[in-house]
Picture 1 (cartoon, rainbow, N blue to C red):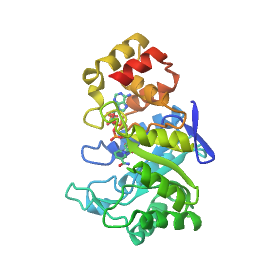
Picture 2 (cartoon, rainbow, N blue to C red; picture 1 turned 90 degrees about the vertical axis):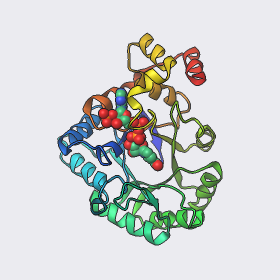
Picture 3 (cartoon, protein in one colour; picture 1 turned 180 degrees about the vertical axis):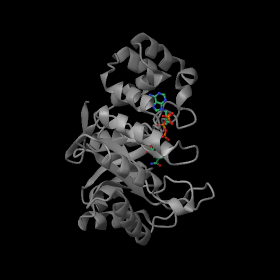
Picture 4 (spheres, protein in one colour; picture 1 turned 120 degrees about the vertical axis):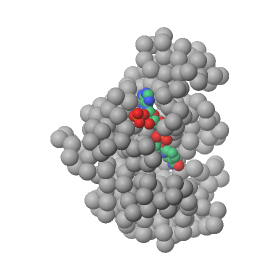
Length: 286
Ligand SMILES: NC(=O)c1ccc[n+]([C@@H]2O[C@H](COP(=O)([O-])OP(=O)(O)OC[C@H]3O[C@@H](n4cnc5c(N)ncnc54)[C@H](OP(=O)(O)O)[C@@H]3O)[C@@H](O)[C@H]2O)c1
């Protein structure tokens, strides 16, 4: 598995997104554990989660706990696995996603994530989404305090615009290592953030890279060029999509969600797809 850099560690160039295993429509735990084990088997060493990946109000951190159990129960070496989680979103249990970016909440959320993950320091802790009720600098200030306290090893932000990325970098004293924003063939408006990350040398983690849980399977039928290029290479359109992202900049680390072994195995193979300049420009134009 090819690797890319987050902070000063190398992780697999394709990560695993944990959300489909824990929100509405999730499969049984056995299938999710099989998917996580298939990811590890394929050389995936970055797993993305969040305390908000759950359904009921009484099961906050469902996905973190699931990942912690699956990683602990894997037979092989997992010492190089970086678990990236997030705080700042809240799910009250009625299907909605609300925000709490207050420093108090973020610090309590981080402690709870630490307990669920059963580790001394969280690999990568990301501020999930700006909360309009709280000045961005205050929320990111809480993340800085968590870094200073040694509760998190690396700090990242998510759903941030270029100004927020620059501000976060300043507040964290140059210790911002990643930005996680939506990016896919159907959502390209975060190109400026991707380019800024490439310029700053920090990781850019596209979320919903295949178009999201409900649309990922239709990528080839929605975007004929992705299907055409996939046919030429004898691979899936999803694999071509991830390879196209990887080619955008060396800082890009897509985190496709999976809840089945087959899909994460397929996605992990994107690192071996070499696209020509002509193919990349056709995909860019699609
Ligand atoms: N920061 C944020 O605000 C934010 C928001 C949304 C998501 N995220 C993160 O980003 C991750 C990815 O986003 P997402 O899960 O919403 O959407 P996605 O990655 O675009 O799509 C996920 C779906 O794609 C399917 N899939 C994966 N690989 C495939 C392949 N090679 N061929 C065919 N189908 C494939 C999976 O199906 P199966 O389930 O059948 O395996 C899965 O349900 C999430 O899991 C989460 O970690 C972050």
